[in-house]
Amino acid sequence: MGCQLTNNHKTNNKTNMYNSKITGLGYYVPENVVTNDDLAQFMETSDEWIQERTGIKERRWIDPTSDDSTSVMGAKAAKIAIERAGLTKDDIDFIVFATLSPELYFPGGGVQVQDLLDMPTIGALDVRNQCSGFIYAMSVADQFIKTGMYKNVLVIGSENHSGGLDRSTRGRGVTVIFGDGAGAAVLSRSEEEGKGILSSHLHSEGKHAKELVLEGPSTGHWVPEILKKNDPTDVSYYPHMNGQFVFKHAVVRFSEAIIEGLQANGLQKEDIDMLIPHQANLRIAQFIQKKFQLPDDKVYNNIMKYGNTTAASVIIALTEAWEKGKIKDGDLVVLAAFGSGFTWGSVVIRW
Picture (tube, rainbow, N blue to C red):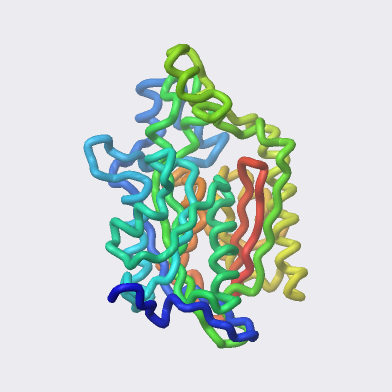
């Protein structure tokens, strides 16, 4: 083939804007189920305590003896999404990979998925926006398709939290929340007006970065310092979260992002057929549902089964909702997320 380019990988110079439509969805979660009672075996907690504060009953954690990793799970989810889109790996023009937990500090998971799926030498971009990572990744993919640069973009959200959590009582406020898993969507070019992604809306507020953060390892606390210190009591390697502060901001920003998306498209809350919120905490989702006066069948939550899978959360929930027939042709679907950064956003889709 030499340096010859296929048509799929040429930039389209048309001035008209295309629409991007979800043509395939898939998700993968590890087989290893960790219940709240399981956690109570190695930290001071209980099923009642965890459910009351988070709504979580169980989560999936990678079995250390398995081959699963952030990129491997992403590749498994991607295979399903590509097949459901009626495409092959060679039809994908670009990869956008969202995660906060790559198995390598660098390079990121996008290039690893490209290799795992034996794809052509297409571009791969990593998005580091934590809980809102998939929303940001969808927005990026949407722009590539709308401008005509690419025809089919693979968007992945994947997380391996379990390998980096403090499993002692000291860390229970964070550790009980997070789970492992991956989801993927194929966005494809469409010329059907009024269908697909109608708009996306992204925001950040960095002054609150330290309220939900993992400070080390980082270039401010880097390899020489880590080796010199070697302190088993150093908690900077574990996630820190100011839970109440995050909750208060989340319910405000979730609402703003949803309202912004509706207003941008001349829609009302009554037009929403399915809201897929980031699965951060069931209490947040219930607060938003009540505020927008949405019935149970118009909001999809699965945090009870999987915990908070961060960048994988929205896409796993979206895929499950679609698989269960809760999303139909013509439905208005709103995706919304809030998380570390702080970053937040929404995507409005006409299915």
